[in-house]
Amino acid sequence: MSEAVAQTFGLTRRFGDKLAVDGLDLAIPKGVVYGLLGPNGSGKTTAMRMLTGLLTPTSGHAEVLGARLPGDAEAVKRRIGYMTQGFTYYRDLTVLENLRFIAEIHDLPARRKRQRIAELMDTYTLHEQANVLAGALSGGQRQRLALAATVMHEPELLFLDEPTAAVDPESRRAFWEQLFDLVDAGTTMIVSTHLMDEAERCHRIAILDRGRKCADGTPRALMDRIAGRAVEVEAKDPRRIGRALSGKEGIVSVAQIGERLRVLVTEGTGDPEALVREALAGHPDAAVRAISPNLEDVFVLATHGRDQ
Image (cartoon, rainbow, N blue to C red; front, side, top):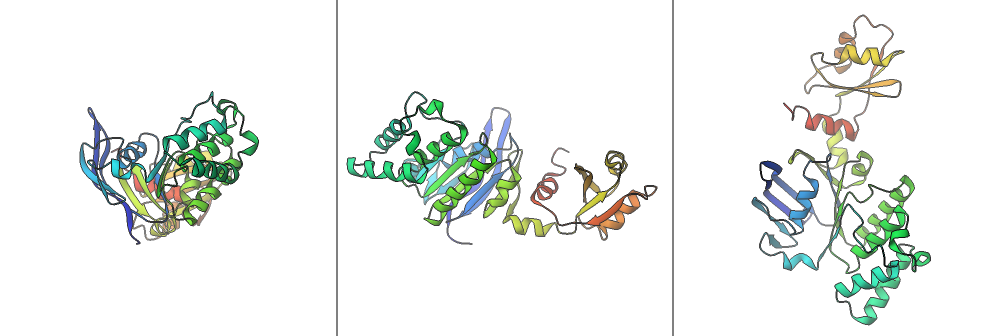
């Protein structure tokens, strides 16, 4: 693994009796998109806020761009960018006015400010919306404005918290292409998401559940790690077959995908297909076959039993 731009060591945060982040250990390499994958309430945003210096951990610490957090947040402020979940820019200002305001905040010299705003308007195709109030923009346009504002000062490390939650699939695809352009230019990114297809776009991911890291690695390595544990069942009545499988020994989960069932089995099962066929004795119409696992399977297996 290449040089780490951010690391956490037992990072923990409590809010009263609630344990939001629990002993989190991460190592985020330089020049990658690193995903934090988990449902709402899994600690993704809290972890990000501690990594940006906006929130003080209850215990543990982080090292970001060589600075120790908590304690040295000012050293990293100008070197990072943080795009929050909600649109946080001025809705009663135009796109151009918002960008000028952000450039002033970052204290860009007048000439560089003009150059940088022109570059960003071009890169994120905002020229047609230059004089449109931010509050009148579509979801995709607001997203482009937010990203342009976030990278105004050319940060080395970019934090993106659920950045595509309110945009359509086409805008989401275009947004990810823009992120990879930034990575090609040398930016490292930490992206939180609950969407499996977005997590698959990341170079590396950490799966979080209830504040704890359940697994981490490249999406492909994580899927390879559970090879042989996914089985597909096709039958005329998948609901009935699903009920027959649920709760049987060796079956971790059963999920209906259209007219098929996706079945996950416990680790160490010698012959998953045989296990499922045996569980379906008396249902000769069911066709069973092994399939390749996907990232959703990884997530289910990584978090299985956490509620017990």
